[in-house]
Amino acid sequence: MNYVIETNNLSKQYGDVHAVQNANLQVNQGEIFGFLGLNGAGKTTTIRMLLGMIRPSEGNVKVLGQALGRGGSGPWAQVGHLVESPSAYPELTVRENLDIARRLYRLKNPKVVDDVMEKLFIASYSKRKAGTLSMGNLQRLGLARAMIHNPSLLILDEPANGLDPAGVVEIRELLSNLAKNGVTVFMSSHILTEVDRIATRIGIIHKGQIIEDLNAEKLEQFRERRLQVKVREFTKAHALLTKENYSAIIHNDSIYISDARALEAPDEIARLLVNADMPPTRLIVEQQDLEEHFMQLTGNTK
Amino acid sequence: MNTFSSALYTESLKAFRSKVPLFTTLGFLIAPLVGGLFMIILKDPEAAKSMGLIGTKAQLTTGTADWPSFFNLLAQAEAVGGAILFAIVTIWVFGREFSDRTVKELLSLPTSREAIVGAKFTVIATWTFFMTVLSFGVGLLVGDAVVIPGWSGELFRSATVDILGAGVLTILLLPLVAFIASSGRGFMPAFGWTIFTVALAQIAAVMGWGGWLPWSIPALFSGAMGPRTESLGIHSYVIVLLASAFGLFITFYWWRNADQTR
Image 1 (cartoon, each protein chain N blue to C red):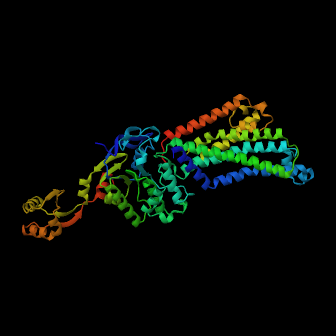
Image 2: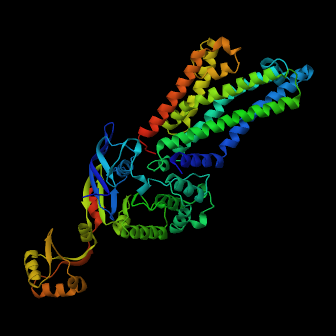
Image 3: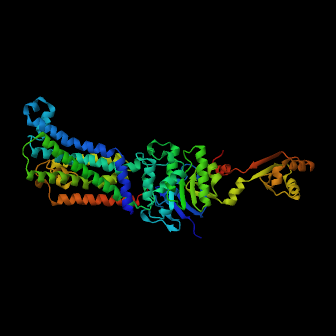
């Protein structure tokens, strides 16, 4: 299978420090791959290796089916990127910054500059020098630069940085629409809730190692609501609920039910258990917490 | 639109829009203007004495108010001033990408890194050579306005070789500065390098082995330490060319292969 991004045992070592260790990534077309990790986990080093800015100590990278070569050669005409904090030439206007990006991406039609400014809502700043832009608008300029050539792969490092809440929503919708049109998005973040809202797949990197790959199915589990029931005789209670056609599971001395009818009418569950002389000690509708899962994986607690 | 022309447009626009070309060019024009002032002072010894320090300094460096002395002053300023101001231009063109953290915008593009580095060198060479020619042109106008004796066609041809030659030799040494500005990822290491080489050039020239040190050679070529035939040989020009080629090679190599972490 041809992956849009494929790494094999990708590693980067600085002296005794293993910034990235044996990272194996396979990202499919049209996915929004959220790359999560704490600060210093190895996200940016990995992204720079995906972009040919840093040469791996070991392993290899394929982007759009092409192995990255020496001297940073790669399929960059089809890849847009935003790495770490956005930067622009402060003495140039927004339009000039985008126009030099257009030329460096070897695009002949100057209209693409206007189009991408419209798309990123920075057309009204076109004559402003980049050095006078707010952090949020600088981020938009960085994203505009990454998208000016309509790439089939976007590699974005913390794309929501510096954006106001409305900007975050705009960018989320923009990226979702791009993905629907077949664009693959690889985005890193340490803001879990933001990634959780948009990503179709999540990879978690910790201390340079990829410790979790949550596909769409697993992510859906985290997004599902479920009813947690605590009963003293939970085995008997579980049997009773199963008999009543609830899809109940036992986990850590609790019973979890994800049926819609249980979520809509938890009082029915309570009545059933009380009538069977097994009154619940706890009955609560909860959502599995990706954040808690992340914290447990990375050895942090809430 | 090929990759080099794209990169050249980009680098030219960045250069034109910044204030660095204006300031460095104005800085470089100080030499002919101050030279002209010295000539005015030297034309009238009584006024020179009454000027105190400035008059004494003018007397020490040029001696007489004539075209040979004026051209000699211009050539020395070209060699020493150029070593510093041209280095500032180079440090800005390369070092600003790291200080402004814009270097990542020049990577992972269909335009190759080689085209971008080549465009940067082209802008630096054009810009510094323009400064050399402009300074010489302004010097001719100032000398003409001051009205000093000793002009001849032969002298003009010789001064053109001295001044433009010193400028070109100085420009040829800039790739090493570009490498330090790139590998040092900013301005300061390259500034330190420039100060070091200017100081080393003075010491080497005084000790008599300046003909073997690349950074002494432009000043010796300008006639700062007497006729250049006494201090420079073919080996001197070969050394400058080798230093230039090495600087170009190592800068291109670094941009192609170094990890870019900024």
